[in-house]
Image (tube, rainbow, N blue to C red):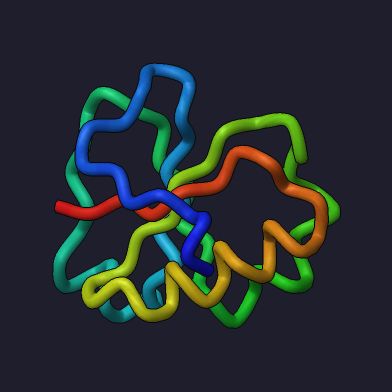
Length: 88
């Protein structure tokens, strides 16, 4: 997991994957107007990996960074090359 970069200023092409539980997203929505945000709860990522473009740049976001790091590592192991962690 050490090779996955933490980013606080996403590039224009980065898509942010909000991997928090839907309840967390509802209570504290991620507001970031510069990038597309996809709400993809951590418990659905494995099922939806096939629908994501492996060439796209993704930044995973969660409140504490634990779930985002865990799933960023899993995505990297599944052939995603442009993966990072979005931190606020």
